[in-house]
Amino acid sequence: MKRLSLLLTGSALSAALIAAPAFAQTTGQPVETKRPNAPDQRPAFAGQTRAPQPAQMPKIAPEVVAEDLPHLWAMEFLPDGRMLVTAKQGAMHIISEEGEAGPAINGVPDVLSGGQGGLLDVALAPDFATSGMIFFSFSEEREDGNGTSVASARLVPDDNGGGKLENVNVIFRQMPSYDGNKHFGSRLVFGPNDELYVTVGERSDPEPRVQAQDLSSGLGNVFRIDRSGKALPDNPFVNREGAQPEIWSYGHRNLQSATLDGQGRLWTVEHGPRGGDELNRPEAGRNYGWPEVTYGIDYSGAPIGEGITAMRETEQPVYYWDPVIAPSGMAYYDADLIPEWKGAFLIGGLVAQGVVVVHMDDDKVAYEERVPLQARIRDVKVGPDGAVYAVTERRGGGGSTILRLTKS
Image 1 (tube, rainbow, N blue to C red):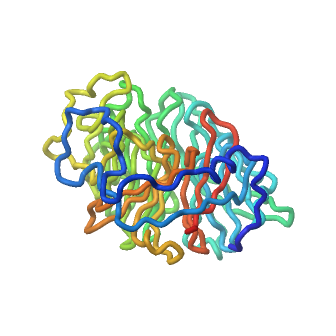
Image 2 (cartoon, rainbow, N blue to C red):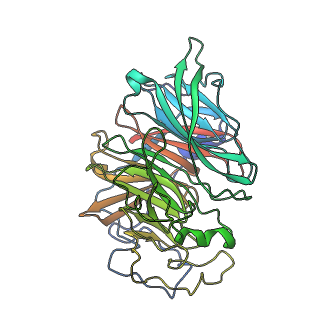
């Protein structure tokens, strides 16, 4: 994707970015210095939270590549360098290389866009260049409530910067439905063998969230399906009576960040309670504890359940944040434009208002750094040019901006 010429005047966000302070923390000290929300809790092992900053951190220069967009939720690069984006209210657009949004793509099904719901993630099929197939998740209104659903379709662009979806087919529905407007997830990630991982939430409220521990329920899980929406034959609970065969892992809260690492393994970051966002590498059949085991506390200030952070037969998070970053969107950096980030995870921070960079060493977090952007970050992608692209959103809804991050 070519570098875009930009006019930054007249934009409050652009002005804020120009004035963004450089990284002021002392090298080697933890990036997080605020008081924890759960000060009596202790990590299970060294480095599980508040990792130090790396000795060498690149100075990052953000630039605006597209602005005055609708409230976006996700973006994906097309093979020709343009961007396909989803808008929370239920539209898809193609963003040109000049940063202009084309007309809404026809054929997107109705979505439930209230609360935290809407048109959510989008992923290109691994063979998109020849098939044109895309997959997208959305919150769907149903007779008995609502829930997260996944659809497939063929994207057919037109000459006017728009296009249409053909052969739209809802391939998977999170069940049971629930009459609520929170914790839909969701991210879609294709694995190395064409499997599709689908992350969802547990619907937040005390009544449904306990179902994250129930294998007969689809709340609070990572699913692993094929392109038709069916469970893979080697999924961990295919032969478990009463279990949903699509489940890959369970005991999750609200997963809005997911990506593959350099080995093709799935990693996720989920919204935890107050002081309990988690980085995990979900493995087949494993229980990640929610809501029986968690770091952090309820947003009311009360403990969650018995207030425990460890229990037999549940997995510890690889890393957790207290206070939270409010994660959304995630990418693995394997490009060369910012060599200091090679092999790191890039996580969008809604509360952190920037990109959180997590450097790994043997599946443990070695270092953490923050790129302040003075904006809530909803999605993060690595572009074909090796730059990092971040989707912003205004608090409470409203428009979005797409930023390009490179070394200054």
